[in-house]
Length: 331
Image (tube, one colour):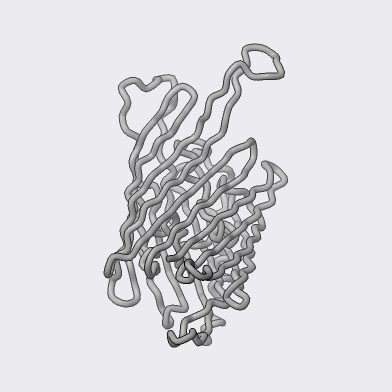
C-alpha cells in the first residue's frame, strides 16, 4: 500500500471512529484536579496544529509534549511563548535543550497567572489585589534507542499559588518515539504529570484534596520533505508537509480528546498550519485552530543562528479567543 494511502486511512480511523468509541457526558471528576495551568498546552506551533504534536515532536516544543523528541535537537534550541487568554489570564513557557554527544538535555518553565481583585463593598477601585496561578520547572533528558527510536523523561517541581494557601508538588513526564519509513512516519507516546502534591501540616482542611492532571498521549505524524543543495555543505532536508494526529486521555477530570493538524512549509521560510480538536476536555474547547510560522537565518554576526516566529489563533465564542506568539532560536 502506498505511503500516502496509509496516512489517509489512519486519519480517517482517528477522525471517524475515535470520538464514537470514547464520547461521554461531562466527566464526573471535572474540575477536581489541581495545578490546572498544566492543562494549558505550551508552545505555539503545536496549538496551531490543533494540539497534535506527540508523534511529530521535532523541535524544542517537544520538551512539554514528549521529551523523547528532544533527540532531534542537533545543537541548541531555545523557545519562549506568551499566551493571551480570557479574564486577563497570562501564560508563559520557556524551553531550552542542548545536545551532549548521544544524549540531549533540557530545562523548561511553564506558568500561568492572573490577578484577582478584592472588594469589601461596591466600589470602582478594588481594596486590594492578589496574583494567583502556578508554575512548574523541569529538567529533561532524551536518549536514542538504536537508530529509529528514543526515550525521554522530565522531572518537574510544581508550585500552585492560591489566595489563601500555596501548594507544592513533584511530577514526571515519560515519552517514547519510533521513527519508521525512512523517518517519514513518527509514532509517539507520553505520560504527563505523573506525580503528587506534598503533604502540608498547615493545609486548610476545608479545601478538598487534589491530584495532578495526569494524562496519556499517543500520536502519529507523517512528514514529507525534499533535499536542497546548501552552499558548500552538501544537501539538507527541507520540510514540505506534516500530517499529525493525537489522542489525549486524561486520568482524572476530563474525557478523551482527539486532535488533527496539517502543516505546509513554503520555500522553507513560511508555514501555514490548521488544526481541529474533538472532545470535551478543557483546553481549549472543540473546534478549529490556525497558525503561521516564519523562519530565517541571521545575517553577519548571527549567520549561524536560526530564528523562527510562530503565531496561533484559537477562536472560541464561549470563553474568548486565544492568541499565542513564540520565538524559537537555533544556534
